[in-house]
Length: 175
Image (cartoon, rainbow, N blue to C red; front, side, top):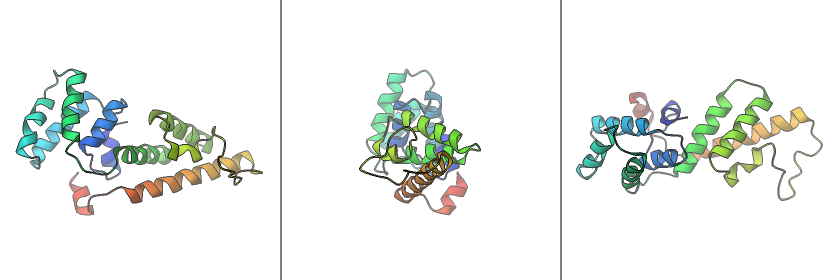
């Protein structure tokens, strides 16, 4: 799991996304360095950020130093919610996999755990009982229940997709 998922699904990562992924262990220091190089090559960073980006390009920084520098960059980012963008990318990757319904639900449960158990993902995690009197799954067979949970996950994914500010198509082709 890495920033490669963002590009695969047409999301241009922000430094807030990098920070969120770094804190959860989804992004490595090497990926941070590669991202800094990519941003510098793109030439769209401000002069005030250039020094920090150059420092991130060197592999001899400690993890704490990398985190501190990425936090400095992330503070200036005003892009959408990093958590929502990671939820989208990881859930999309899970649902794009080939496998049985049971296998897909297991992967989604792993994503739920990796992301720190976000409440908005609870409705399609198979081992969590329905809340608030939701009786939509009562009386369903195991296979019907699995399909219903996967449909809830797809609805969640569609809502996340609508919440993310995707770049224009022409920008995606340059990635």
